[in-house]
Image 1: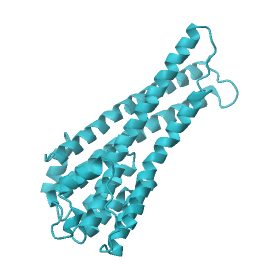
Image 2: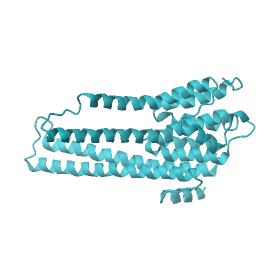
Image 3: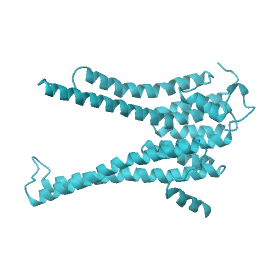
Image 4: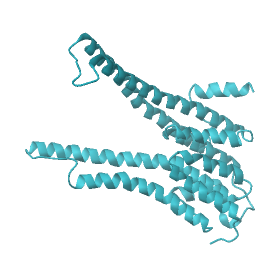
Length: 302
């Protein structure tokens, strides 16, 4: 336990880690904590930036790992079902050990994601220099952070800004709530850093565009369902034999197709957001195609 840390330092560190329990909505707090403590406490600043990374980059890795495991289980179920059908045996994918595995994966992965911030918060409350697995030590080297130095040498300012900007890019994978990361960075540190201001602004525009795609896909599908039920009947078996019913079915099919195509395209924008974050961390002043130039021109006018 380090008794030299103030209560304020520990509070910011603890609550920054605990904000991960809000599952996306808490991403604001680490950025505010970093902005508040960046030239007051190197320890609190590092812990806030680490908590931000866990909620953005860490969430991305967790989600992708989760999807890979689920896809693996789905492939196993398909293979087992095919083999059972080939051998003339009955196969229930929701029975036996498969159900247990799905339960463990679904809740186990979530519990693991939420457990680490709890451990981090407890460690910081005790004055420990907590490091997340894989990320913590790498971030410390990137920021030139050594707790033993006290506050005699601050973190590398350019790398702080790049880390915050990159986490804003990475957060595009967090539907809706990811937008809070670049918005908060722009509000609290945009006046100080023109680099962070530009990166945050273009990331906000980019994420708004991606979220609009999600919303449009939902609108297409919802409108298609409304048309389908309105033209085929809301009760009993739908009437598909009439011209109106057929028209409703066609409209529903087309709108569902458009919605599906949009949903399939969205991950490509997520990948571009991850690439943008990576390039920023590598030292590039990354600009999104079209959006980056438009934001740059807009900023030049003011």
